[in-house]
Length: 306
Image 1 (cartoon, rainbow, N blue to C red):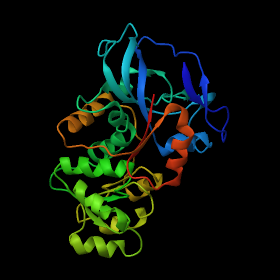
Image 2 (cartoon, one colour):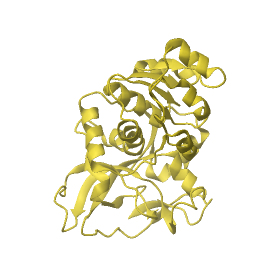
Image 3 (cartoon, rainbow, N blue to C red):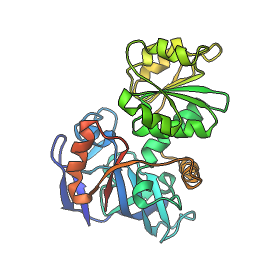
Image 4 (cartoon, rainbow, N blue to C red):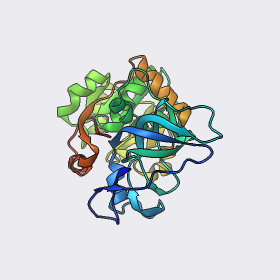
């Protein structure tokens, strides 16, 4: 089968022939229809996570997937051949990823695809959507009486976070550059410019402070405790900087979870969650997709079709 691979850290991506993946007792084989680009994909390829993740070359990158189940292991009862699925296929080591015609995935990483989503839309959801969901629901326990500040609200994870927080009934304040303020308003957030003077700008629209903070860019984490309302100490979560734990908060590293994927699928199907796709590339042009992602100027997800 065809897959995108790189043979060592820092090398260019290539479309190559690789063996089809094996299917373990509680795994499934998925015919990949689409995957999406996340910055972590090319950061791993540069060697940036070498101290945290075992890597076996040649690597097929990618963790997001949407596709059709081709085969299931003998212990699998929740999925069957022909099922349309989506998932966050992060395994214990970096090797056989989702930038391929087929991928083997543990059942804990997959769920039924949202019925109303295209494969491209479904592939754009898992990593970014799960990150936002797990931070807001599991780490911060956001509810309807919360005022949530999201640092980096217009990015890939941020756009999901705004929508999920709103679905929980929270008021959302989001930091972004001025060019993204209308976009945040459309998502349901109150935008503020990030950077110097942030505390004053947030206090101007939330005089009593916010009750929870989600940090998606690391730049304003140090001022976050000043913005918390009385009684909200420690309700800070960051996906960027583990030092948030020194503030009494939570460091969130997204993990595969089929039940959480089911929740995201339901939010998409009822119209609560929308997906913005910045651009779509065929598998053979994955290098171009990475270069676009590395520019850092896209709004929405970059999708690769297979």
